[in-house]
Length: 409
Image (cartoon, rainbow, N blue to C red):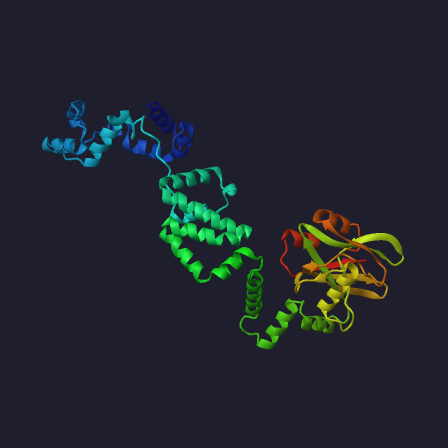
């Protein structure tokens, strides 16, 4: 009311509606409404509900013990009430039931909802040590629902451990447990395993898998689609060959394509967290340096043949299977005669035999298996070698076959 009186005085003084609103702290629409409709207290009276005349009877029936809201609504209609059931319900809940609360104070807390079947499957398959605290609590609730759920989790966990640890010799015992479990879902899964048990046991035991094959298929599709449907087979063949520089034919084509530069084959051999290194000296430099086994491929020599020859000469070890490309270094060195170029192909190798260097040049001093972190530190002492591509490949930060260009002076 005080603001209304102040508004009238300011209006009589000739102030605009916007200035009045800013002065008394209300919106311009409020000032306009007050000027048109008069005093705000007389503009609208207090709200009266259709239920208000029946509230004494409603309170009386509630106190008498009639807590059936539908019954009270019917009695009010018989007395002339024309309002809605929702109004009766809301008033009873707000005024009477649980002291104005929607639920009683002593009501137990509502349990969190159970996960969906897909979420439960993820909980079953994940490593127990990687589950968060809340996920562990949900998993414990699931296992307490029924003995079959608990048994299913144990069987799934055993199979997952076989898969991760490659303990395929436990497969028969696991299949017997599934047969005794009477769980139809797992029994159906076990039936499929029985149809090709030898292959499943091999997959659960050997380190060999089709991941490399699937990777080559994906790369082939990528190269093909980069042509947008306009590349014929001859061009696709060339692109695939140059994308995989580790076959004998590719070694020959590399010599043809890079006849102007030196081609180097280096082996990256790993064993139980160690890296194979050779210690060698350069002509005219008495200081020994550590490096990866490998060297220059001779003219007309296949790439893999050069890698095998250098590996045998510098370490006495032989390749167990065809190596895969790890990364490629394109080294550009500025000289007085111009720019010299080296193409160093690094291959991931699996080797066998006893270390016994047989270097005919007499540059290799020794060969050792060195812990990977220490090996990177040793390689860093060679001013002409950049360890970053090797480190990225060892850590999985770079895809196999990544090409790096390095310029040195």
